[in-house]
Amino acid sequence: MKGFRTYLLPMLLLFLLAAPFCVKAQEVEEDTVPSVQVVTGDDVVEYARTFKGVPYKLGAAGPRAFDCSSFTRYVYKHFGYDITAYSQVQFREGRPVESYSDLQKGDLVFFGKKRGVRTIGHVGIVVSVDRERGSFTFIHASVSGGVMEQTSSHPYFMMRYMGARRLLPDQE
Image (tube, rainbow, N blue to C red; front, side, top):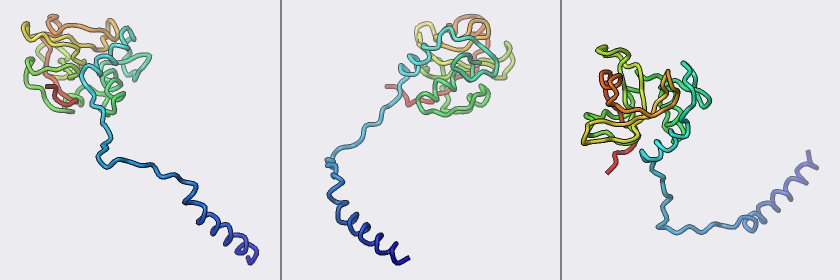
């Protein structure tokens, strides 16, 4: 034990004396504030479009195949948003969007399982909004075509639209 103390004490002393010379302090200006990157609807849409043509598969989590809610989850997770992979639960996440005229790129849009039935069965991401016509284009994982863009004015979706939710900050 005596040999260990004899060895340890000089090494500790050497470390304490040398440490201030080994580390160069980084000067930081007091007014410098780290920038935070804000995710926009354009960012979300651009990333979502990279998956166009990826096939639909129920229960798949991506990126080689998606179902509708795993697609929206995968896209948003890329930007640090952790949403569930179930469309009915996604319909309760974020903030409600009250009307078509309030829709923005990146909003989640929800559709019913069957015409006239008020149960969420499908979800997509708004790509663009046509305020004059009162419609929007969205990207989603479709059973029949995989990841693709479609318009809300298509009779299938027009009859099933249930609402929208916003995860991103409001756009000016």
